[in-house]
Length: 598
Image (cartoon, rainbow, N blue to C red; front, side, top):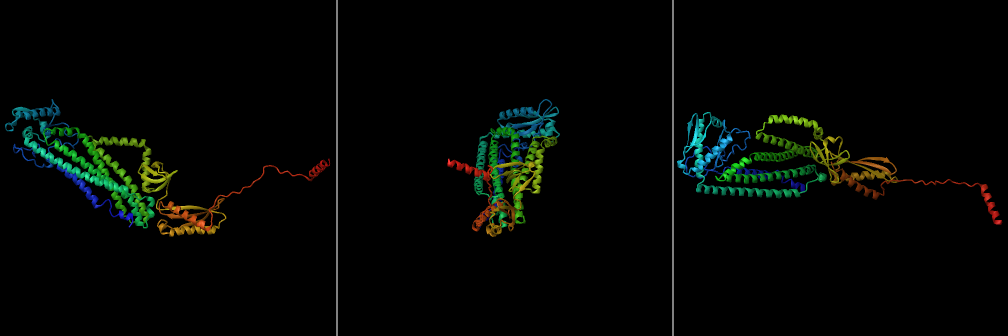
């Protein structure tokens, strides 16, 4: 069994991985419920009547009975309650008051809180506590131990959906009486000891949950290290397998490895988020257990209200992007597994899915970020209708100013739809060539032979050569020595190509019988013989190298030389040729004879 086949036994999207993800999410949910539902007081809602004045064993509260200050308003838009202000006691929101003609809601709430705190600290005996209301003119007035607290207005009643201020005064009297009794009870030693025990339990739960998340993160880190150490199957080696099914499996392996790493990153992010929620939520709950620290809880809610919403929007958007990437990868793998096409078409389909998955991920990320920004603005109470209208006008102006960007996007979309090339192809664009490493609607990035990353805007791609779409071809021109037997040379060239195709190692790569075109040219080098060999995508270079090696050995054995440039050199003197006549020769002889007699 090959290494590639053994990998298929344990797919990353297995039930174990799904269970692990649900365990992480379950731990986050359980931890949040345990922390959020931890008792903060005696188990009564802020406005529920007190059944007894003794300290009771705390009970787990229902979610809608939580006594966190302003927790029901924390995630509401900022514009809500804009004409009212909360009244606190010990960090709890008791009720809200509306503005009057002379005072704003904040000023009224501050004065009521000051009086209420003074009355609560002055009341030592809860049995002597009396809270009632009486009409002063046409408006009810709430009194504590005979001291004026505040006047209930019709606007205060309308905040609770009531039209009669007296009904609201009756409700508020009971709420204030319960709050003052609780104020005294929470400062008793027995209650504080009980809250300390509860804080210890919550702290223990926080430590256990944090330890669980740390263990899960450690396992995820080890799995990621093992997955990173496994070298991905390169596209150049895809045709080394012997069957088409293994070729398709090898093509999917690289995509599967990337998806596995993304899925592990998503699980690790969930664990980190769980730890943040455990420690942040647990600390928040512990602050609310004691009356002396509960004011810090209210202060944290007030200061972190807007930052928390921003952080929540960022976390949700980031989590949605990571989850969408995982889902897109999973859908792509499912579609590839269901493909019933031929071998080459299946390989091409895998490359197309790889390209489309990158583009779809970028589009999904853009949409999710836009939705997150709009949701955040809506949460801050901003009206989105004029904002969207203004964004449309600004977008139109930007589209006119950035026409190159629009051309990039349009051309990139056409390239994808027409399948001109995709991630994993080797292409030539103008005077640059390389392996398509990244592609989206705006740019195409190539990795050349030297390892350089070339970025090309899609609008500048007019003519492109795809060297690896569906099939490739070896185009060889072989120069033969002019003195060699050309027919014998043609026979050897064809026989070597055919023997290579019959070789089991190369049979799956060479798709058709080699086509010998014959003598393509005659010149000073010799006779140039041309041959075509059709191969699988991206395998033409491997086939050409092996064929040249075999042909060289065959030529050497047959005594045939490779054609080399030849030249004929003609040498001619630049001096004139001198011819001596017979008369001059005789005269020269006579002159020589006379000289000798002398």
